[in-house]
Length: 235
Length: 235
DNA sequence: AGGAATTTGTGCGTATGTATC
DNA sequence: AGATACATACGCACAAATTCC
Image (tube, rainbow over all chains, first blue to last red; front, side, top):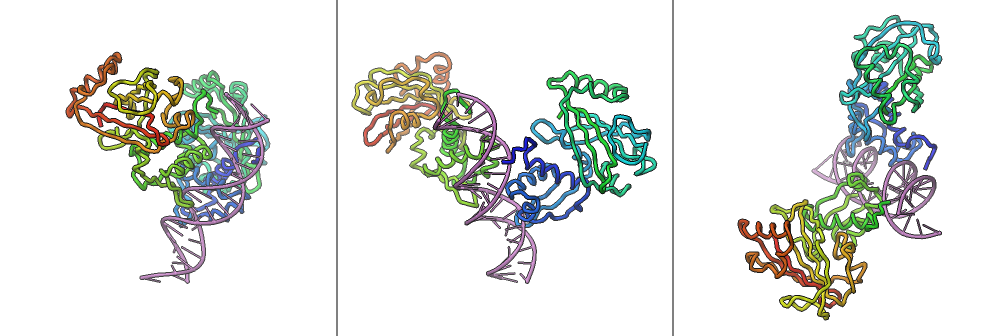
């Protein structure tokens, strides 16, 4: 086996493929290479790749036709959201959706990592749901030089769809870090100021068995870091 | 592992599958799900399931075709080998299980047929269920010369597994006789003395439309009759 | 129309690492 | 130590569905 202590290889493969599909690297209806070619190209075995493909099929992102091929099926309501597929229901699955809470252009926070040339950024706050249930809050920073203004209605569809079609940004790499530190210690300034539902959710999270988790992501677009995401919730 | 001092899981799986096949839950020639799916569906690993399937194949209940699938093969002589699956739900099917009510060593009843050299026998009384519902009572007599004592815990699930592994008895022939005579006429002395549930069940049986049925079996082990079974219930 | 080629589906053997009894 | 069980991973051979010529 691999035993890098990391996630199983077939999970890594699945997540990588989901990211690529969500980022629009495959056209809708596009046929993937034959499994054997794909596997050798990815440096894995057919069986392992097939486990990953089966996962994509279960998520509705892929149609597998015996004797024909594996075909990408874009699902607009899903595509962005699988960006952060770490957040899944126990036992897997759950249909991810997101409510955009706010979009503001403002100076980047001091404690953010470097993610673009500008001193300003767009702060996007979203409520993440699985099958309608709130499971996480996330704060996404997009570098200010990428676009002048973003309206909340621009993000009605998929974040990645917006990046790709409106900004011409294609995702080439994503780095994720997950911490199991208790949530309140991380809660960024201002985050808990959201009213009602959100504050209540944070409260519940901090008291839940096992607490919550925090995830940080940085996203590379064509080689330039331009996005920074922090996220808290159950994993 | 499983522990609980019970049988190995692959044996339990094998017996469960045999019961289901013998009970007609799978049509003759039916193809089982892929091993990987089946294993996850049964909450076990592929390796363990494959051990069980190999056992079915050895018993002739399954044909395993490389690259194609696992196909159920009904074998009349085997369903009688597994003896007591005449009792089926109307329309077929039903998952048979059994609760051992009592195991006692005592002198053979006068009205029993000849089924072994000893004057004593082990009387095993079981409550037979299909999909959890009580459908029959059975009284099994094993010749006393076969083994000194039997504990109720020895009879975990399959009587024949116990015979084979603990007593070294291999079934070579089973003779079944079924009678549709009304139940009360047959009811053996002492049987109705079982309290509560059992007596009540007998009562209901005798009043049910069509009455009940009675089945007698004698079993040969390596040429010597050593077991006698009488059974009452719906068929 | 029909056979060959391509591609996915499936069983099978093997191997490693972990855990439990 | 050994048996059992699980998860992961690799690779092969054959079956079956589809597509191509």
